[in-house]
Length: 415
Ligand code: PXP
Image (cartoon, rainbow, N blue to C red; front, side, top):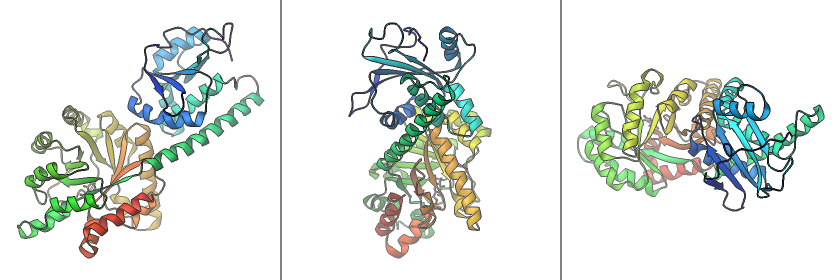
């Protein structure tokens, strides 16, 4: 590896180090890019650090965009234009003993990484993690530019670390088990059928929580066909987990949501004639309006989820309008007419989940899920929450709500 003098413009002594708790391995993370949310990077680093193993000193990881990496590329390598990753060892060259606590610097351009990820059809985060591993190996003295043999050795080492990383990511996912959120609209539908006061969705929500649900969902429709304003008010007071208010982006409902402050709102397309939400929300064509709505919710510390079809364009647009979560519409998969179609539609959901998580979005899924079709989600680690209503309530009529929720929680725990 060549020797580069490190300037303070690369290393930022004031940046807060990112320290993995159990072992004293310091990674000084310095973020100067906007392609991946900082929070997402922080979340993805611990498994990477575990996969890389111990290192002899502090490492600075600098994430930048093309302009900045072009400057370093020109200054230290005399090459023009941006590159994907640069690694600067502080253990080589003329004065390796000057800073014995430091090991080296890795600089990654997430902008170039995003281009490469698009070309390769992989997630941005996967590409960035690969590049960090690549830089890391350079710091260890591996150099693919020396000879074909050196290139093969470096590739083999890279594969080894990346497969350890996959195992670490799986472990992390097991620790963050997916949750069940229960939609209680159907309880309100039954109540409205007679116009009385039973069954009460507020009681149903409490039973669902006691049985292990980790969220309660209600859809306050403009026509108030099932959930009423009173339900929202009471549930805001009684829900102990997370209250998710599903809604169309109508001004009246937005104002109610801002006032009541659920933990989370899920924006869905709403039509008066439909029996239930029919398709995903169209984000691409209404980015401006949605971005404004998202900002209003964020100002009130309300998280925003967008219910969308698992379509790459809609997923990227969701990220662009500032959503925190995408709920991937599973209804088409649930209604597939045969196994071949189900497999194809499921693959879209899997790929959508991976893309969304790679963009730093949290992912949930819902619509039409039941005790059978949920099983196919085994191993789709990106999905953090499943929103289920109809199949749960249908079963609850026969076996009781407590048992129906416990059975679904059990299935989701096994995914
Ligand atoms: N997610 C969203 C956005 C929905 O509109 C619905 C239906 O109200 C669900 C999840 C739950 O769907 P299901 O009742 O089919 O389980």
